[in-house]
Length: 68
Image 1 (tube, one colour):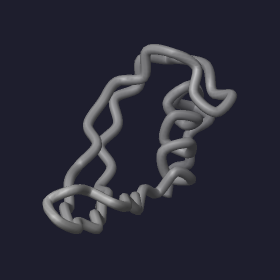
Image 2: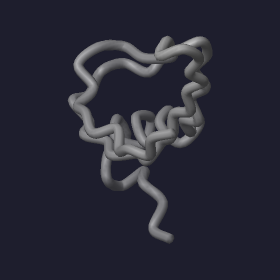
Image 3: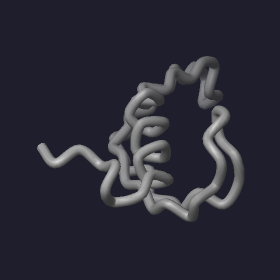
C-alpha cells in the first residue's frame, strides 16, 4: 500500500477539459497484491472527480470562480 500525492501540470486535454496549464496536487492511494515476489493485482484510489473539477475551474476566469 502506498499513499502519495499526484503533483502535475495539465499540458493536454483530459476528460474533455482543454489544457490551461493548471497545476494540481491531489492525494491518492495504491494497493498492491503480491504473491511470490510478483505483483498480481493493483487497485488505485484516485479522486478523478476532484481532478476534473480542479482542471475545469482552472480554465475559468477569476470572476467566474466561486467565492466560498
